[in-house]
Image (cartoon, rainbow, N blue to C red; front, side, top):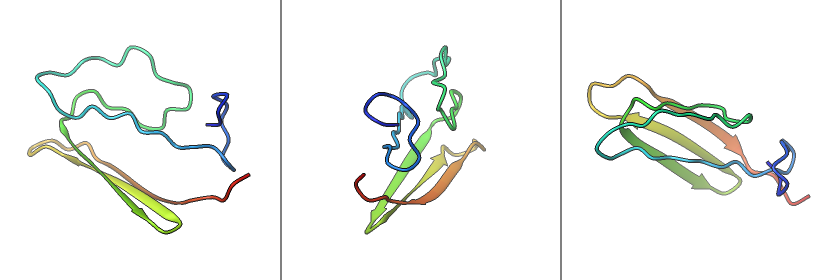
Length: 79
């Protein structure tokens, strides 16, 4: 999204909201319209990797869980 909260694939910023540990899960009551993935049932760790001009992430679920998510993407220049 851009600074106004509008989807901007060319120059927007990707954000991550992650809460992967704790005593219990809470339901997701509102999903943002640009949300790509959401899961409120799996404990785990989100691994973020940064490299020149690129980034990636991989969600590693806790032992016995099956939900996972990963992706690779390239960075963009300034507008």
